[in-house]
Image (cartoon, rainbow, N blue to C red; front, side, top):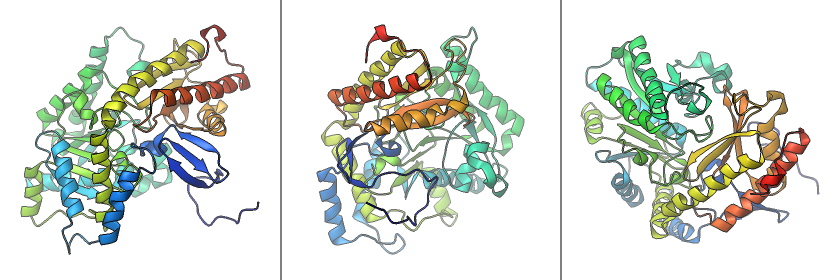
Length: 453
């Protein structure tokens, strides 16, 4: 069957089959082939596909109204979802601003922090420090935080570049420090950067509590999180948590910040909040910040679809489904199972150098030498080849390059939070087969005595 030329364009010419339907953790193309959604799309489909309860609740709202502009009407879905979210936030973060996606959420967070500083007579504070590598979004403001040639590329002259500190990739360190000491070492890099920039110019520090695509589910030592909070408090710098990927249960808690008992000043989230049922994101902030903006004439920011009633009805239904079926609890339990199975891969494949993550945000990284953690040759293109091998076998996984975006192949394994232990077995069986083929293609060692995982 011939297919007419597409008028769509995205990032590449990579051909893909037409999607027919989704059911739970599975997707089916029009030929009937089944795929396990081993990455939840782009870590989005937290409650799985085509959940009938969520769709029914969205249909109720569709029958009433699909759009009501926020300057013209209040809507029950947006008010109800805001109240629900405020109750799930750390204490004090009880004001919610809705957006349509992660880039919008990050831009909203940084603009909120900046405008509040201006209302407080701190006009000199405008720099937002972020980590490198990291990813905070594709719009110009978010790209300024992301930095790096891979993402900024030709757009760099179009935005104000922001300062960066090194991400705590302690698994690459070869020193005599303890894990706790390494966490403190990386946190203190923030203090050094603030001092170098001039404390009076630094507005905020933004970080992913568990790394996303750019660092492959990176988890810092526990000591890092507390010290970062202390440094931000010491200098009067806002701490922004980018929970776009980690929020809505992905790490086994509703928010990843809960693992360390940290209360950021602002939280940005998206992805799993709408869970693929509708474009949705949110920013949570303190009341005193919001009231200061409103007293000054209002927040100088907004989007047409902010608080869209259909999107908010989807988000509310997603959260209710998670509560009704203990989906976050399942994520925590299945995350331990998945992590154990991924660690087992290291026995079979010497070229897997590190496994990391929390909950069902997990990843493994390939190396040419475990002792030095030297990456595989970039010409091997492992990050794309393994993804294609898995895809051919009916497993969707997500890959990026950790080290400057040009080498350091890592693979995210992040199935929907409803995944079961037998389904994890399915994932691992396909992944093992793909890894065996990859190893054979490149004459890499496989420890047959370790058996399949």
